[in-house]
Image (cartoon, rainbow, N blue to C red):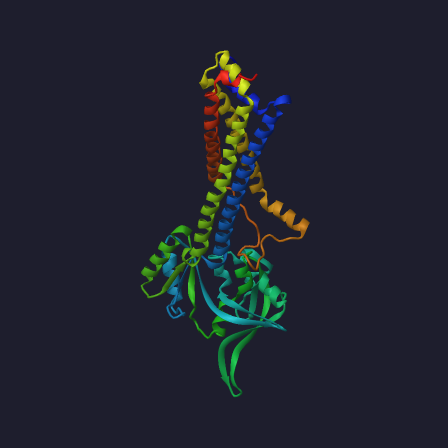
Amino acid sequence: MAQHFEYWIGRRYVRSKSANSFVSLISAISMLGIAIAVTVLIVVLSVVNGFERELKDRLLAMTSHASIEGVDGSLGDWRSLSETALANPRVAGTAPYVSGQALLVFEEGLSGAELRGIDPGRERDVSGVADVMLEGELASLVEGEFNIVLGVELARELKVRPGDKVTVTLAEGRVTPAGILPRQKRFTVSGIYRVGMYEFDRRLAFVNMGDAQRLYRMRDAVSGVRLAVTDIFAAPEIVREVALEHGVLVLISDWTRRNINFFRSIQITKSILFVILLMVVAVAAFNIVSTLVMVVKDKQADIAILRTIGARPSSILKIFMTQGSVIGLLGTLSGVALGVLLSLNLETVVGFLESSFGIKFLAADVYFISDLPSELIVGDVVKIGTIALVLALASTLYPAWMAARTAPAEALRYD
């Protein structure tokens, strides 16, 4: 212990009792400040990561990885296009679709929606709609039966349930002896889905592709073909390859292009939040400076005694650097542990608070996602912990240097 007395004294100052309880109090406050700052930063970044993950998963569940559409909104040779796409080893599946706008009417309720005609059997290859059905099945969309599957928010708006009949009205008219009347058809609600994104749950309805072709008078043509690829991050390159191999002028799109603003805004928000909350961590870490300065003032007599019995300035420096390092290390580790615990159980905690106080943190009609997701990334935790620890260690330098320069005669003059 004689060789390492500096570390022993530094640790003793952190947990000193009785007459020196003030030192322990301000040390505990400094630890708490760092712990709270680190916890908040980990939880906030986990929530942002969760939003990005959920947004990507739910968008891909409904919009597919890529799509190829006709230049004029109609694609007649879609079968040959599908064969060309499936010949590409990086294409996992294809599915044709018909898309159009319609007005849905049920009793006194009405709502505009995007009507998407699909082939239920092939739709599973490119999207996860069948996996988010709350009532009924996607397979109920049989050609000729004129069934329709609605999003949960759209069904709630129209006040319909499976078995009810809704009237689908198109803006295109038909000429009759009574004049021009809007084209309409009654569909039976055969299912309700919930993807968890208000834009889809409120605005999108599915029907059989054959029924949609009749409704929009497209004969055998479709609006386009949707693709599922083996590497979602290579979707722009893959869909371009397929279009060039097909050799016909078409319009191509992919999930990154359609939703680039969402992901770009999330990345910008994450960067800004990281910088802002890192400042909070820095303030908490630099609080160690004031803590150690007060400790140095409080321990003037101790420093003088140690110097008079032979302690070198470097030993005094080590004592107070040890104290600051212990405060920073314990605060950082506590913050990391608490942040990880909260991030892993955030949905449970939020659900408990919402049910206990009758509040909703994310309104579905305001935000794209109605749940509060969380995804803990180990790299973020390591980065936050390392930065907090480095800032805490840097905060010990000035007070420790000030303590090492203390003159024993000046410190003991009035003792």
